Length: 317
Ligand code: 13P
Ligand code: SF4
Image (cartoon, rainbow, N blue to C red):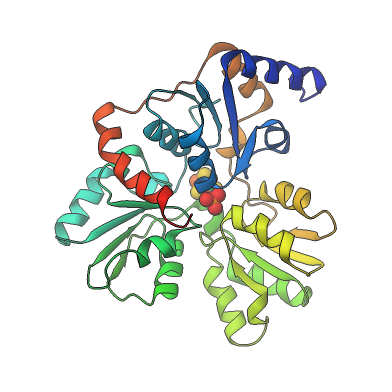
């Protein structure tokens, strides 16, 4: 299937016939981002899914994102064009592991990144995304212990920002972001001294970036730790001519659309998420034609997870 004019026309025609809204995460293939009714980060897409009055939500992203939409809108049909689109970070903690961790810290408040399974969300007090993780943790009384899972780099970022000693962090990671490392970033920053650095907090290099800023190698105001949606906003606001981008490479498409005059360069151009890229033009067409893959979340699990997800979408509006 070629993403040509006939493909576009057919996708939009089928979407209209189903009264479907097509949502695409910022890491999707450019042609999927371009045809979607909405693109955005995890938080923005969850909010759109919660508010949409479409009969069907076609989620072009990974499985936990589509599950989150189903948790918020149990009466809607939620489709993901390829149900094999998983997430290595969501796989780094199971509900059973979380229950055992909670048992070691009775009374602690559990904050889970949205990159988790519905079963893990059902064991969670408040979910968060990279764009509101700091606000979510700040909303918890200072004397309460916090269990933060599963991403260790986002956890370290939240701990730095909040200065909170009673925050315990699970040792999970995303294989794509963890692979964007400090030495690579330092080398690129040295070669582009006037560039801004846009860094996703899931990256292994987020700490190194702040270290470079701390020792004066890179000016403090050039280092920005941002969710993918906040990167698009920052691209519109910056005066920099060059921006080094540390996140999954799909992000470059949305950034170049937002600010075509800026030279956006990937810190690691091999940082591609194979799960995100499973949503191909052919898979999207099939989803709309055949109504699959449909996403189901067991009603009792969805019921227990819904409060944590609703708290997430309410914080940091
Ligand atoms: P955000 O789009 O919320 O920044 O999340 C990034 C991510 O890794 C999703 O897979
Ligand atoms: Fe998961 Fe990482 Fe892929 Fe995002 S980039 S979906 S966190 S594996």
